[in-house]
Image 1: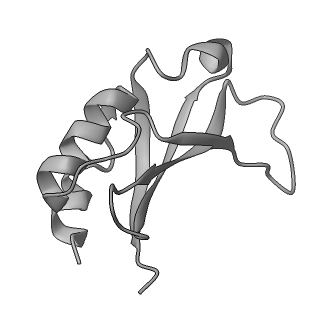
Image 2: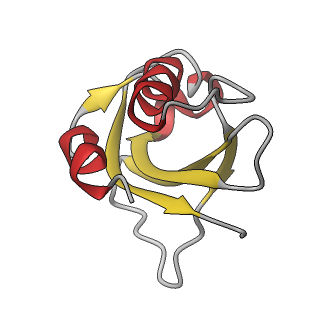
Length: 98
């Protein structure tokens, strides 16, 4: 649906509120929470040598059951500040429930 526009954001470092605004501009819909609902992705084989963790921010669209998942990585040292620091966007997916 918005894959071409989403691909322009993938690979960039951006804060989650900035990402939320970009997603609003692309979809033409308002995001419920500017930073999304953040969950850590648990790997089957943990990599203790890595200095980053992988997360998914789920952005719910206002007045719709559709949502957007943004997979991103961030330094482990910034885990408590994910809503403030730039994160590296890996993949953005639009999920429709209709």
